Length: 195
Picture 1 (tube, rainbow, N blue to C red):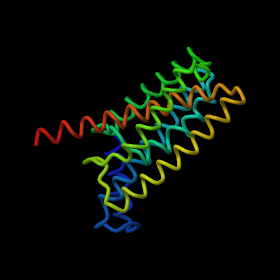
Picture 2 (cartoon, helix red, strand yellow):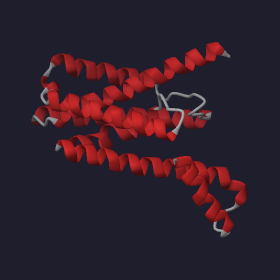
Picture 3 (spheres, one colour):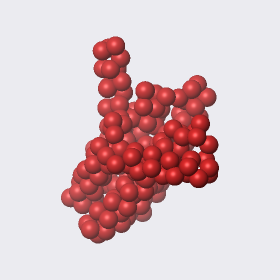
Picture 4 (cartoon, rainbow, N blue to C red):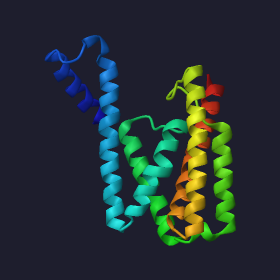
């Protein structure tokens, strides 16, 4: 769906000489990503409004989104699968936080959050066939990921000391980044053995 729409838009742009035909695939990919992320953000915002959890959505934009971009991890094979999986995972994280809003008060949850951050610190960024990076990009993404982790740690600390329940969302969402990173790493190793 997203790929076909991106192809149609790119065809229109090429036909009207707005973009160069030689860069067609780049435009198709870029438009597919923009369309997917726009629809995804709208759906996640809708889910958040439905649950009365706009703070969790904001936490998603602060804790999950930037870290996921630079750390990498599992990627679905198609945009549609990505949309469905992302919606399910986001909804599960939202439900978890709604069931346990004071999760951040648990020593075990805080320790788990620390472990999640250490794992991301060590293993990010993930390089695989879906996220091919050159040496310069790897160094850049590693640095940005580590800076984001420091910022997240400070934000979680402030939220914890101030008693803001958004800290629970932060822990769960950072955990989700960690799980996707480890899953991507495991699948990359498994696919490497098959070749």
